[in-house]
Length: 396
Image 1: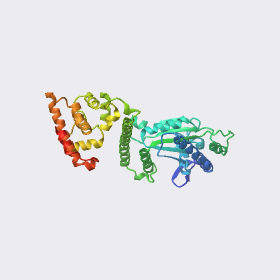
Image 2 (image 1 turned 180 degrees about the vertical axis):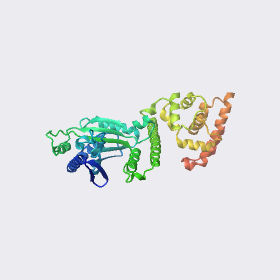
Image 3 (image 1 turned 120 degrees about the vertical axis):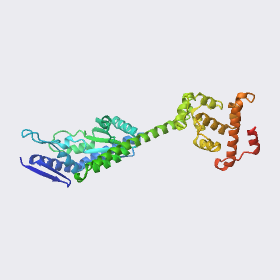
Image 4 (image 1 turned 135 degrees about the horizontal axis):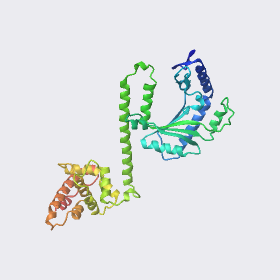
């Protein structure tokens, strides 16, 4: 069988039979004629997807799109299934690429965090008056199940509904008597900005390498290692976002901030705000709820106010702890900083109770240190220095 080399647009050489080469050339010529109409379809569906997000609380970093280039179309149209025998010659993978390829029009939605991929996909799929979702797959599922690494991406195959730009394109198709119905398949890829950067670089180096002889297995190893690092970075940012949302809710006076301070709630708030200050013994946090309640503090947002990072910094400097205090001592010191002598009177026990004397003496000593610190750092703290009589009262 005579074979002919098909060359077009400079970067791909395909050795095909004369019959297949003629078929590909015809498809490429037809695509070149129709591509401006498909570019209108691309612009139209991109605008519709942007409008979906404009009416939602989710704001992607950006939405981009492209209409497949002539070069890329030719490369895909030239792919063959190799011959297995003289009776079973090679055939084109896509004998009618204009009608069988779903990625001639493609839209990319780039988001910040992994959970936004799911949210974006659900928003698009719910726009049933615009699109009918005919395919939905996670590109990283295979990597997860095989224990390997790759970039994460959600791929939707959508079909337009009664789209006018599609109808204009369909009117230009040759060899068809079908009435334009405005239905057209296209692809939407949804990924994070990290996965987007990784995939763009990988595609340029790994799949668009000008000279495959220059390839090294080290490149594959580096891409895999980078994908693993990016996965951990995404997990970290996702955790940061979740913690920020949780802490913000603690301050919501009409929501999480109003939740009563049970021992379990105190533990949850503490471990979220100060995970590095861990309780060394049991998990009973009733003592903390009791200390707070002594000052009439029974709400989550009130505990957050006590655990203010600036207050913690000043308390640590004022007392110059020999050892890093645990939650018990730190909360006691923070309440002493905020309420002064009242904290001693409310939680220090009776003056006549011999068992209470060590605690009262300790609280009084620490309060004196705090007052000294306040007087030395009055400008930084934005307070007036205490009077000498106030220091004397605190010492008694």
